[in-house]
Length: 139
Image 1 (tube, rainbow, N blue to C red):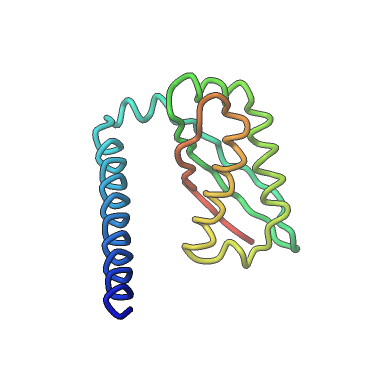
Image 2: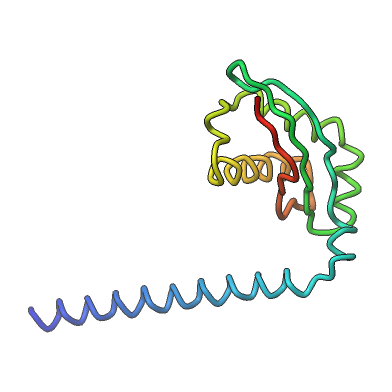
């Protein structure tokens, strides 16, 4: 009984180590792929959202601008054509957000991730890879 429990524990430990190794391998591959993209190619597939001002959930307002990195130039062009929908998604998301939720690094990362998720609904069949806040002022 003791040998069987030890064997199960060793098997579980090995499984976790292998899974972590595979995860790290694919994470590194993704980072290396992004690093291989030239700045010019990256720019060709990045959409700029100029500074916009809107109310937040509470009695604050925000002035913010973004860069939206897509998977290819066609996706960027699609989002440019849907400019009014992109801005609408941003305004709706921000109007439901409290100023305190945007405090600190984590709040801004959360905003970028939420926008990425919502914008991917518009980017079909392509995808939004990353949303970057390029300026932000909350008052």
